[in-house]
Image 1 (spheres, rainbow, N blue to C red):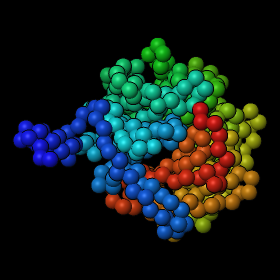
Image 2 (spheres, rainbow, N blue to C red):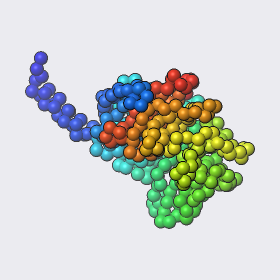
Image 3 (cartoon, rainbow, N blue to C red):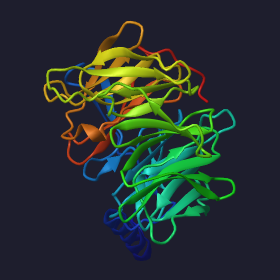
Image 4 (cartoon, rainbow, N blue to C red):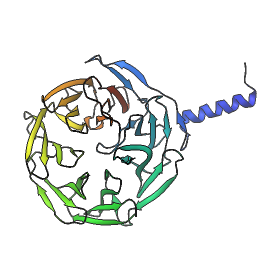
Length: 368
């Protein structure tokens, strides 16, 4: 049956608008998922996004996954916007019309149990910290960076959704800020002429971790109990808290090429620093909720893999090749129920996002 001329023109106009990326907030994108067998392991991989456009995962440490949804950023509309993907249908929905989306700031808000909820999400748009409903897409401003300052990349959100921590800079000065997300009030915890970076709020505690120069520190939200942490001297790699906040897990980055990268744990109450395992040159990692299994991205050119590392056996299992030209975009992350891992790679073109099941290797948990 042929379409009337008006209907045909309307359909053609919509198709051209879609191709040009003129979609706008709330518009849906059909699935572009492609399934293939990994060349190294023959495990099934699903490429979730189209490598014709760049699509990347936000910074590790923030919740961007539930068992049914994924929060990510893509430039498929012509500029960076936030999207929510339904992991069952693999359809995506555009969530923002941002002036200057800060990709590392994206995060789902927590539910009552402290796990991720895909009902709302946070992000910075230029100087504004926003909270947006994923359903009706109603947004509200929680905080605005004051004039005279600019925000440094990255945000850490508290597990209970009450606070956010990040760095602002003005000329040659840096300041670490804590924002109360319920009241919109902010306070400065640390100021320095040296760069402050890698801020991570400690779960279940009113304190945080940050790096200043070559040293690693912790401090309470009120600026009290400042402490220099005695981590390994080469402990300059990514760092994440365990879910209960008792330990800081981090990667070493040896300057000597022959020296192995290691994954280490620092106990906040005991002060004990110990090796969890040596790794195949991990550049990023994420952990299951009980920190018994780790997903890591190898930066080795000879072994460009996404791997599982078990804490008890201290052994690695290769999941897939990532073959990314930049190991920094791989950032593997577990789902809350530990049943799958998502990671990034530009092996097929521009950066895209990939999915792999790990339920054969990792015990599942109740999805919070």
